[in-house]
Image (cartoon, rainbow, N blue to C red; front, side):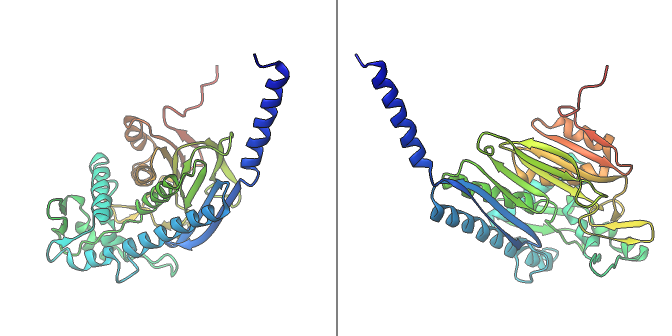
Length: 330
């Protein structure tokens, strides 16, 4: 029989061994400008070399996604599609097929409020130079916005545009996909606690070593202030707001979230945040929620299992999806 004294000694030895094994474990991170935004990775590992290699692998994946999906890089796969898909079916990668299929899925469930062909008009906006298309230009190109005219052939791995002047932009879904890919890379390398962020999109692996990650949602009108702080673990969060890329034309805010039906900046909402398991879904869902507004947008969110949302409308009022709504006061 083992004595109590021996039990205590064994327990102390186990604690010492455990401490020794984790003595060098710590948080590692990096932040870089890729994909036209800030990419950051923070993770916990007990091996600095392995941590830095994991971070570098994520950053290189972000570079790959940017090189493939940027409309501003002439050699990107997206640019090739926009140049040639009107004339003939264009062969695309499995990765691009996944993004386009997912995009069309969200176009269908939102009845076109999410539509990657918004770029048929959207490309004429330049937020840095404060340029927007005229009413005549919008009217001329608006008919080219139509997700139903994007034809995918999965067997042949091709995409074809049926309308002249059509072009697409994956800015409403690619960053969410990118943080998912970053998370996949880290999980494959044994990382159990991390966060990968690309602009307003984040994917969280595990928790923050026994505590939730505290992620703030910006106040759309007060710089440096947070409207809401959320305790999160094992989830994805995407936020889209009219304060990200915009310019003012008098009292009118011209921003990058384009209503596909009008070709102009959506109105009625300042910020939308969506939470679910994967960034590709949360990123895509922020746009129809923003464009459709609180009532119609939340109807879509509340129909999808495992998805929650917070909306800040144009008066600064907060609205929550049914599973997040605070209890009403008695």
